[in-house]
Length: 635
Image (cartoon, rainbow, N blue to C red):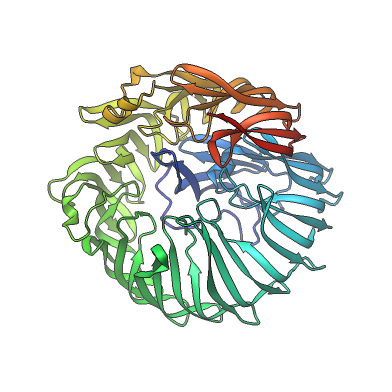
């Protein structure tokens, strides 16, 4: 992903975009969300944070803006209705709901979900009062490509009733019962917040009038031996509050970084000593961080914390320092393994002050022995000064073998007295050892403007590989060359076309190189003039129209799959083909028919979700799978 539009967003902040009742407030607001990026091997999607903006205007229009591009425009008919903002980038780009409104601006009749231009057999009916009625198929809040889980059950006058189940690929994962008042009752199996193919965690226990009661258990699938393991979480009291000793699973728990929190609750508040524990092979527990909570559920005293922005598996990036009733004070140190890598000061108000060193979230540490001198290894840091919690003055981005002395300055710029970027800046996009991508251009009070260039650092120096211009409002305008979201040496893909004040317009092309295994290994990044067109199509005011060739979401050197067909107002229509694009050669591997509404119909040959090398024959009726079988043919 590219750099964010503004630096006004503070880490881990939740910017209020609605009032206490969840109602509409006009203006432009910053927001923190998530996206997923395919790793270099093409085998795993890594979760990343993203900073973007939303604009709410008096007419009920909601604009989602990321790095000067308008990704989505929604229209809320009733601005007195509770506002729901999407924070998942895949949903912002790909999720739509289609249906009708009544004269009172309430949803009525049949509503269906559209995902990546394809209408789904997902949704249900609204009655004349705008209430959900009858059977509904809903999606999880975290729904995306590898978390296509549905919540299925009945509504009566807008209240969930009876049995509801979590469903994935026709397999029941969990669920429970809603009583006549729409409250959870009895035994429930729920899904972990981070549930996907890398985090197969369910949580099991009893409800009474929507309050959790008694012991609740975690169950998770260990990918190392493909077995389910059961762990007691802890106990809820009669008020539905956690009490006594508990084991909590970390929100970002997955099959590579298994983190647990172990400590004690008193009426729902953490108390006393808590440990952050890593679940190792054969389920041995390794304490990696710890600290103490006071009686008000606030951190107090000295703490070892895990740096949440660094998910590194060979080292744990930790922070060590003191809390005073929930507020950081004094000197805090950053440690890699057991070595101090940097430090900085918090003032009496809990705000950063003076010189600070930050490790880049993009830094990919080498797998070294933590007992060696870490600071002799390649790394990247941000170096500058804080004043009362705001970055001020000159900040440098450094890369080299020592943190402060002898570093190579590869970027940076100036923050004004309001903590906003101003003037000329060189920013980091990706960093990995000797190859990294930088962005070079200008800010005016935190907003990008004018020409920005994208450079790839090679052994022979910098090569310009993309870029374009921002208008006076910080929106992309005119001709641009963007890097693909998953750009790396295994996915050397650009997109090029025109923006009109942040909205894609006209012809857009995707370009790549001829991939050969020996070239990828010996010459990781090719010159820009080696690229040729493989895909693309036309936009009309940001909406796909006409003939398109699209890249598979997993597109990379070993998985060069394309899809070719027609769009009408962002909805897929008619015949679509699945193509295997091996360098300049194209082979048809499958496909099928979309009807006029965008539903898949009749027989399709498509990729198996669980094994992209296999094909399957699927029979559809209005988007619903009737039958499917795995074919012998392989990609």
